[in-house]
Image (cartoon, one colour):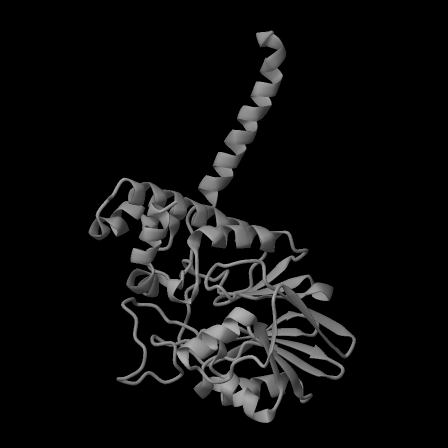
Length: 316
């Protein structure tokens, strides 16, 4: 009887060993090094472009004494914009800070002189959507999840979406469909995945970034539910990812991001349920092993997410 079970046992051990090796090779994240510079256009696929930057130590185009600064030695960038070109006009995803809109529009016009017909929001954070207030002056439609609109209103940020959805919506323009999908809480409670089905590409907003996941608990974020949201994202048929911040990624990058996030959750759950003091958490989490000890989002995470993250995990 033991002999009959050996082949299955060997297969099981091999599968576990392979999974372990895969996990070890993808454990540490190596962040892109950002050189100081202005906004730039990157072609994603035919008819789809990404606008990144500007790249500065304070995220804004021009750093001022009153501007944002970070406790790191890194350059930062505002949220990545996507531009989908159709024969009848443009569909734009996100809008950066409002003082960046003129530069963003100049780059968009260099891609195509056609008018912008829709602005789609991944979520409400100012580095992604504050520019809505400038776009809104032209009378175009701004589309986002209902919770994202509520977050605009809650913090008094102008430019809230005038068209909202609950689970799924589509925009059709010039024979092109772009879908907005809400698959659960994560970075906030109003994160939309923007899906370009004909190009098998998603814009994930800050659900996936080149950096550690910042959980905005003040806007309904959840580390636990974020993993479920990534699982739902992985069910979509895509091969290319425009992240909220960072370079173009693929499905393997999303899988690796999920693995690191799950590992961080496992560690925090263990620490929280053992009652490890808050002041000992950062060292105990060993963020360096994950590659998240000094990313563009680490300082914000430490200042805003650490304590509520601990509390979420302690209450599981």
